[in-house]
Structures are given as structure tokens and as C-alpha cells.
Length: 86
Image (cartoon, rainbow, N blue to C red; front, side):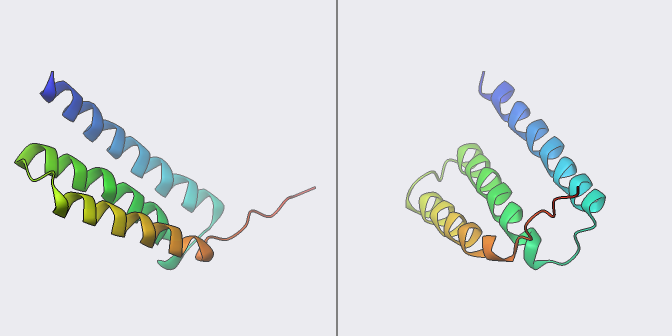
């Protein structure tokens, strides 16, 4: 059961990263600053997956997750607001 959940998480991460990249290209968004929020949020999943695999789901994992969450929230100011066409 543990392997199945890990595989589902990895597949979901790959699909969601490719979707975010596709939508950014489709919208014509360039630059690294606006991509830092999704990168931080995806890294939370990766950190927790590695913590689960290697058994260090203690203070280090929690600290890294909270720091990445705060960084992701901080970098939301660089996300461009969508322009309404009409």
C-alpha cells in the first residue's frame, strides 16, 4: 500500500508540474520570480515524500515544509494578475 501511494504522488507531481509549465507557456508568462510560488509548493510534496521514504519525518521535515510554505506565500506578490479580455 505504501508503494502505491508513493507512485500515485510521483505521477501526480509529474502531471501537475507539466500542467503548470504548459499553462505558463500558453499565457506567455516568463521569468523565474513568478514561478517560485509553484516551485516551493511542489517542493513541499517532494520533501514530504523523501521524508516518508527515508524515515526522517521529524523536525527537519516539518521545518523545511513550513519554510517552503512561507517562501511560497511570500513570492505570490510576483504572480501576475490575469488580464480580462472582452
